[in-house]
Image (cartoon, rainbow, N blue to C red):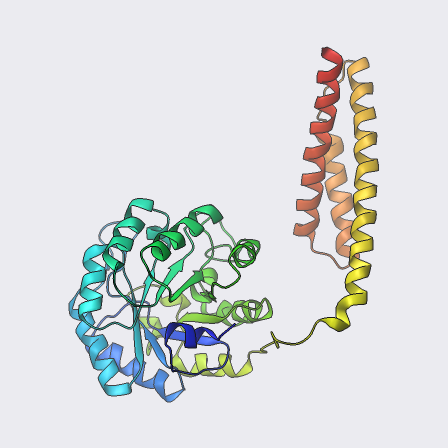
Length: 357
């Protein structure tokens, strides 16, 4: 597949990964131009900045508005960079196109709203502009695909996706959980669609930007969209996740980029081993479920309840500890055991229902 930059910006060649960088928000003409010049000096070709900023609650900084588009024009004039900004409705699209913005992206809150997506799609009909669609705030792959399809149906062919993680309740390491399996499934469903990673919004902390970016590269993402500010600690929005341009440059120079075109012939034997092991796992799980059905029958005959939490808790603790000792993730083993337990309970209930008939 062509690299992402040649898809979005024909005639411009660039090696993977494509990098789009700039501040979360355009704040002042000086802040925008200073950041852009520093990024351009470090080889960044596409400058990003939010002009309209949707906020969770009213009263916060919601962007400078249309005047910021003039600052993006100045960036193009002074640095020769391409410019990108977020749009959330018809008026934003029209204003951005009138200002000759090169790339539009659609944010997570907007992509979760089919009405807003259709309004944007309608305003893009007959226009040839690159559009990137962020995943919705909630982990709903079909909603993400639906948002992408609306833009595609409007005639946009220079189209890509941005993985920025998914909102969750409570305290976590990440601001937005990556749930990598969702963009991986998106790639499986639409393999020709380029996908960028937004490590800034996934991590929420500048120290997490580099490791998340490396993970994205290891999984074959086409590029990165990173928040970078000339003075991050004084940023008007999302200051904790923005990095200095020189820090971004160091980070990009230390990324390990895997060869996505390398032949996989040498993996054939290893993959055959994986296939055999998977078959063995299926056989073992089948045996375990047969035992679960026998347990269900015993519980029915002795009027015992299906779920016995004490026993389940003991299994979780001991099996997870064993998995960690064997070099596996405790969280991974918890997910596996919970899935096995749910299926075991389902099997037991099925036995009880059969006997009740």
